[in-house]
Length: 304
Image (tube, rainbow, N blue to C red; front, side):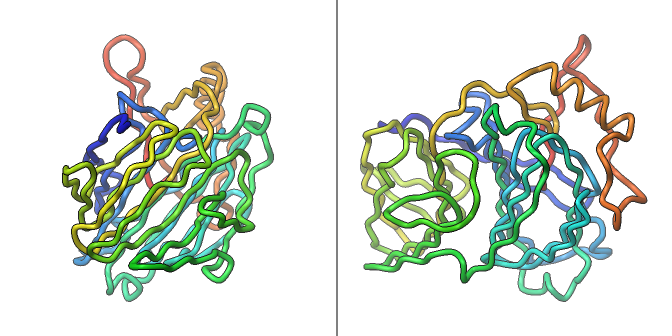
């Protein structure tokens, strides 16, 4: 059955950019290992200076960030010294593990002329990998299998589904796909995984006589095989996998242990999480901790 429909909420990530935030949601914190999902754009009218859109250096622990673009480009820099231009159709998978800092900057206004649009997810790590060494991997579109049939185009971003696999390194069983449906196309979810859902990027679908439009995430129980009918040309992001157990999330930190998040707060305040060597002149300070008496905890940041 359909477990829940999540409506994306607006969140501001920098002076010049707001996003649709899908996960975490108060009634559904995770789908498989996916604990965070933001949809940035489409941004067609860039307000100069473009640096207003930048996300300054900030820290992560206990997760992998997965950045996937439909349009535009982003410059990624991290504590490992990686500098990577993120382009449409690529998979950029950064594992924070024990701790990493990174920035996302929009340094080439001409690259945004066609419109910026980006999905970023966070994948929680299994307990045994929460303190793994940080790493970053870029995968080109040529490394990601594509399947087409009867009005359906899909690219496997990571994991396994519909018999597709690729070499994107993951730490737990999951699936993540970019799917484009032509009007009238019929489509079903993969059945290999316990928790499954899809986010409607644009367009609309019909399911059991009900129409759902952009900005909605639909989540399903295992064993349910919904028939999805595209009401118009539609783009979906499919994701899910096997649950990892309870996770705590505060700002940009994810862990199976509350005390580890407290340590990460202190590490960031004390400068123990190294800034990107080529982007270390400014950073996002630790937010005020309103989880204590007098307020509510801040939401996680995007773009990661």
